[in-house]
Image (cartoon, rainbow, N blue to C red; front, side):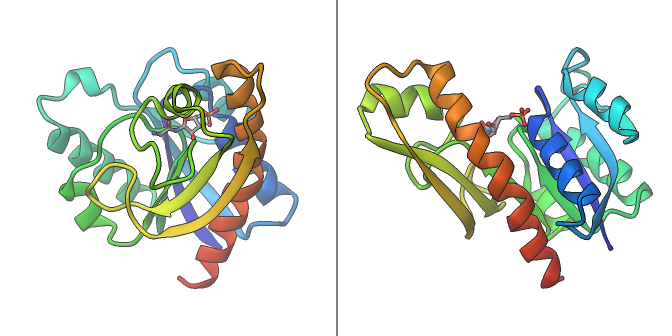
Length: 189
Ligand code: GAR
């Protein structure tokens, strides 16, 4: 059983999908801890309902990205985490975190990388007029939304799509590929 530490900033639907895959026996892992950075993030309530310990590390209270990452490492190590799962973590990570967990940090991103890295992926896909969008699970490297790709899924962009309708279509796929990618990656650890 692989010990997971999840980093999330927002609603936590991916956290929930991973927890569900574990409870249904599709993923042999345990979520030891959730770290979240926004006090009001809905992910905190999901963690509470799922019985996952949650630790708030508010980035506004740290003087640098490196200082936040050092605090993250402390929590992850205290929970004996083997693999770090970024599930809607909206902070840029530094070499400090990567060095502590080399090839042991995964991320999900709402585009078909290497198209549209960064925080506005869905808006950019719509503005660009792409007809196929999607999501990507990858191993985290220093450059934002870069690193070897583990899984991707594509969805159509429909003529009447809004950012929210496209996001919902992408998220359905995220909830399917992220647990699978984690399960496959865990086999190799
Ligand atoms: C997900 O769609 C994920 O791809 C995206 O944030 C969302 C979090 O949703 N991540 C990024 O944009 C990272 N650059 P969730 O909180 O419901 O899991």
